[in-house]
Amino acid sequence: MRVPEAEDLPMTDPKPRHFPPPPAAPPPGLWRQVPPAIFPPLMGLWGLGLGWRLMGERLANPLIAGAAEALLGAVSLLFLFALVAWGSKPLRRPAVLGEELRVLPGQLGVPAAALGVMLMAAAMLPYAPGLSLVMVWAGLGMLAVVALGFLRHLITAPPPARSPSPAWHLAFVGYIIAPLTLLPLGWQGLSLALFAGAAVVAPALWLAGLGQFTQAVPPAPLRPLLAIHAAPAALLAMVAAPLGWPAMASAFLLAGLAFVGLLAICGRWLLGAGFSPLWGALTFPLAAMATATLTAMPGAAGLWLGAGLLLLASALNPFVAYQVLRGWAKGPLAQRTNAAIV
Image (cartoon, rainbow, N blue to C red; front, side):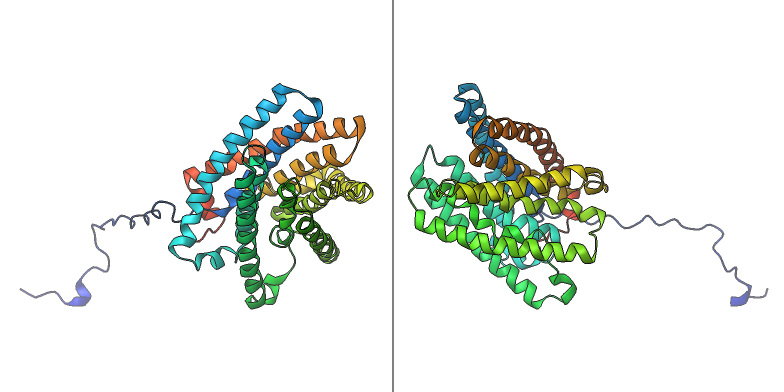
């Protein structure tokens, strides 16, 4: 009997074996990929609570004031949980901070974490002034570390990654939030210095953004970031008013309102890409403009316009925060925003 040669054997197995695909990689451990994209919509909730607090004061309405304090209390708990969860990453591996700042969602979210500490200080001011002062200094220190890390990234990154972005306002102008707490506590000199610095840096970033816009229209997914340009104008107006410069406060306020109005007219163009985590960039500028209007525009006009903006923010900000936080809880937010892993 002839032994079959190799060439006599069939080229394919008559009974193919089906191998299952490899199992999916296990998700990271607890809080090992917390996305910093959770912080911008939390800033929007902070701004919403502070705006309604001011509205309650303007109307001397205890119901509105009580609802605002309840909202600020709820946001405080939510923010502290998010801060502890994300803060565990740089505590485990400090280099993760630089990794977060290499991508746009991190450049937006990491400074927002520091700014959230300053907003929490403003919320705590009526209850614990001493603690508020400690918190605002902690927020300034955190923002300084983030800004230095951001500058290092810009120096070492390739030229395409150095193009100006509205997110730069958070790292390099965000300290203008501190006077909201410092001025009522008597720190007028430091507040004036922070205002002067922001009044120089913010217009420089506005001009850089305008120059970039004239050269190339931003792609649809990045257009919501343009709303960030309104936030420094609102905050500068809010700080200029208690410093005793009503004309300057009105100028910044009108500039910010004009920009917000332009974005509203171009709403379909602005939001053409549909919902994304970057919608968090829409929330805190809208709330800030509402509060700035109540602060810097006197009379019934400021009250009615501020109330209208507050109502818009009350519809938008909780929706965006819910969608983003749900994405964090279910898992896809970290992957969609390229959050660093520790």
